Length: 321
Image 1: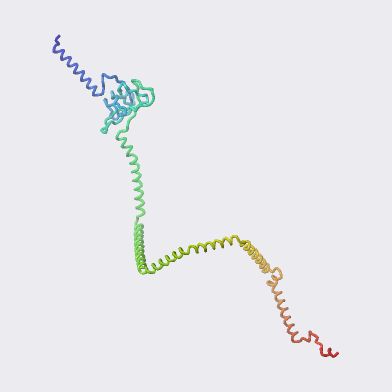
Image 2 (image 1 turned 180 degrees about the horizontal axis):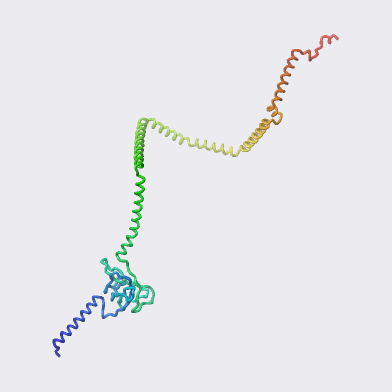
């Protein structure tokens, strides 16, 4: 049976159209000869996600983004249709996250698989999330730096105000005087250093003799260390003997005696007792003085006129009788 030219053209055209449709869908990631499951994810902003972007798990492509459309309600959320290969099991807690797949900003959907054995079914809506875009990432990175920079600028402004207030005309004059004083002090230190150098040069022989004597003294002390140890031991024994002796009792007795003597002197000063009356009573002193004067007169009269007081007999007459 011979086909006509028109039939052959129709068959070839049909085959070409089929190949074109298959190739176009193949390029978009759709494979009519493999069974793919459909899931959905809802976003507020897809940040440039388009049909045909890959659907990946840990960087491995497992499907494509099939369709994107706005919701019919007033929220205007974006409904994304995801075609997933049949052999991949997706738990219900899986998150469909829009990410940047390269540095040029191409988008993809990353499936962050959840845990558990309760898997999503065909037509289920997965949880959605979105990776920060370049602008948001830069803003998050720059925001702390911007805050620190603003604080630094405010601090610099405060410092400049303080500097302007401190370095006024009077402060500058005082600062210049301070530098002059510092310069004078450094000059004085240089002069003193020069004098010390001169002194060391001129008196180096005496300094050498002093150091020699010190060395000799140290040598002598080292040679007589045993004698010094004996002296120190003797002092230690003396201190131990004093500590063991009844020195404390003697000091206490002396303290008591001094207290008693102080009491006696107090009584004498206050006129108590005979000695106190004698010391403090002028009339008694005068009477004693007058009595001593009268006794002196009596003794003089007895010496000059003994006949008045002593009867002297004639011893010779008595012998004759």
